[in-house]
Image (cartoon, rainbow, N blue to C red; front, side, top):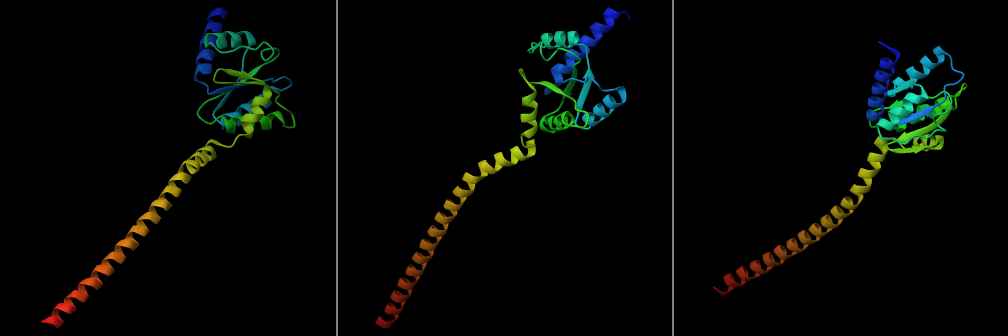
Length: 187
């Protein structure tokens, strides 16, 4: 396989990976040796993140093929891509922020979330967000609160109606007993 064919295959592979990713975090891997990068990859793999070192030219072309924004400041110098797959982007963002603050930091360069390209602060803001499960719980709790109030009101209304019906039955029972006794006395 020629060098040009190899690059074409790499470009197609990266294009499809970028298309499938929920988010992409751009990092600078300068100063890391192979063993340290393998440790970073292993830690990120636990979060369903693919960590790839790619040439900036290939990354730029793959972004353009996916009609995604390109920022030359992010794609300058050594760049690695952390491709986040799946629905949970908060967990991997937390791991990446932890790695950026580690003893040997992995500097963050930017975040591509959907079609929005942001700086490294966006990764930190994403990492600070509550996990997806907690957001769902808050949403369900917020939706259930009005329903609980409605149920209380309806329960009070039904209880009141039941009390009134019991009083009517008691009153009718008393009136019926009195007329039956009166009929017996008159006979």
